[in-house]
Image (cartoon, rainbow, N blue to C red; front, side, top):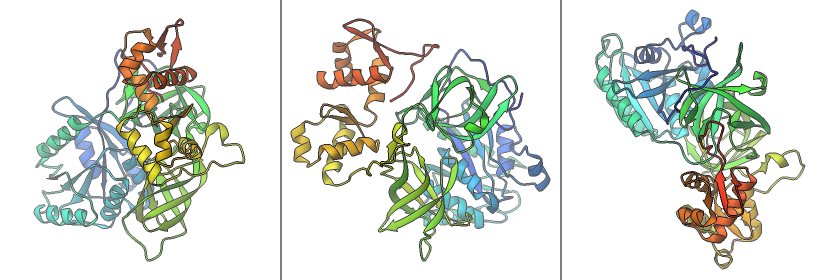
Length: 499
């Protein structure tokens, strides 16, 4: 059977007795021929460059997805990204899925043009952990490059969390790199709450199994038997594979191969967003905060933007640090998503955009001509969101909303933009309130009473009843009798993390 992850070979169908926990995903970045693939090859014991064209040209063209087992037994997923300027878009896609990066600079060449571009992409994406790795230290003294590269990074606003000099040929400094990766792996925690979300980076057919897609599960939990959605289409998860082995479930972040039942590969190409939310808010416009990298004399009106594993053209409007993006198609973007803006030719990173207001319409409304207005902003809205951030299940009273001058229409617009959960009857909760409540209720003895739910949630009876009815409507809970409910689970008995 063809391998779901390049360099690995195993069946995708079938299940394992246990699930997969959150795993650190580390990507490489840096100029072509600075030793990224050699580093990955020594670290993982796997050849990341498997295409015939890569072997012929002696450079990485596609993303290589492999994994390493560290001396402690801890595993990390490794994304080997291209270093050539022709494949900057592919590199950005690989970096976007990672939680940490190794910025590779060769000791005998130093900071180079694509080092600058890749470092700019890391700034645009806001990666929390970037390690400076100076390779080929057997060919030149690495001290000068370690110092100068760190200065270059800081000039871009990129603070290295660690710095290592090594040689893949002699093994010099290899132990230092392993210690850094151990720290990154130990610090890895599950992704933020919310429905499972994964951008597809490969899609293909496996004989006897059907369609297989690969990607990085950024958050949430996926279980064999679950349903995932893309563009309103519902797909059943037939099998899962993590690091070449079948697994019954996976918790983000994690590299996954997902076997989708009854779905042809051309319906889930690279750039598809898979989510456990059957009705995500989608929009053709997005607003956010500018993260400048290489500021041009004049911002281009038409540019390329990359988000997740998709790249598309966009109309760009920049005013006083705020950005508005006009997209050619509706995407299920969320506040906190990072967009990388490149020049129209695609060879230079201009900026990042930290999305704040991707307001739009839900999937069920996307075919209608009307458009939901963008989410409102202002002092009152800010006070409401701060209140919910501090107390997700404490719905403010109507007099509080009136004092903040937040109108019912603004509440509806905030809900349409995915910034709050509006349960009707004047109840406004944090956008992730349902997911958090579901996780809390899943830990109770089943079935449970409304009173037990109220105590566990620490919420008022009014909020508890409304949340339970909301979960009932989404088929995440179900009544067993007049007094009791139970959490609905998958066939494997593992809770599904959905909003």
